[in-house]
Length: 399
Image (cartoon, rainbow, N blue to C red):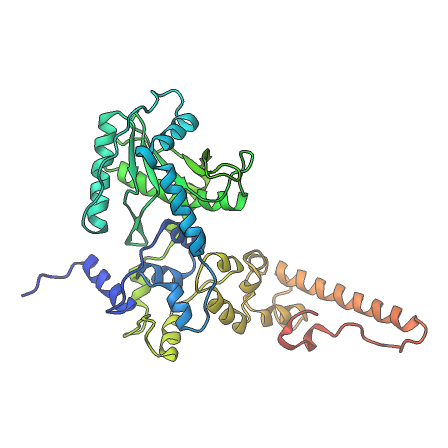
């Protein structure tokens, strides 16, 4: 008889069925995990990422291709710069770590660079954990090049690969993030730095899980090293980035994620996201999982165009932004908002409804004043309406 299936094995089998029997799993990296944590209410992204579905291929199969992602040129440039930073056993990288984060320690004249190769992500994660423990006990500068870390995400393990982790002589650990965007006069693009900080915060969380298994637990530093090209050259420079805020937010958002097995249990029998399925069947499978679209998804998710079209078709107010959605309270669709504004529905004591009705009154008053002024101009027709009423505009949008 076959061995009994454990809960973890059953979940992996279920996720493989959702992905497709012949479809390889796409690893969930820190960038995708940070984007998932930024939108914890999206069950669609949670189950697709948990099952290892390639969302770019899925978007193409749905007829809504996305331009999201890194260009091949940027990818090659980033790899070349990373190789330059790590040349000579990471001597320049360790010098930057010493200079920016630990100047009081002994200079890193020689560093240990342990071998981290192993079979499969689980094996590499175990080998990384062993190397981190040995480096902490050795009390010497150690460079871990592309270690593998495991982080529990909604009940399913995610394997993450930071650019590097440095172990200091005092046994503490530092995440190193290497980016190819320039640092001009000591500063870089704030949006790109923020994205790198959120990505590094995910690595910090994963390192803290590894550290928690050791006695005594090593200190995981919350100041990470961001390495970038200096000005317009290819020479590396670095800056220390405090990710405590990003780490707290990401940890809190990941904790809010619905467990993946709970989402999988709600799906219809036979649901599969394999891109070779018929378009109608594939669309039905995707639509069977609730999404939480917001304009921010356009910069973070390959399925954003598909979800935006569906959100617009349903008249969801989240299409206009999360801040507006928060202001409208229980009003979730454009039709509900217009009906409340015109006094056709809604509780008058609701602050959102009262604000909408006041705004509608001010708009109507402004239109009357504009029409009266237009009627007083020479050669103009009395009562000419400059702007159509809101309810007469197709789709309910303002003109």
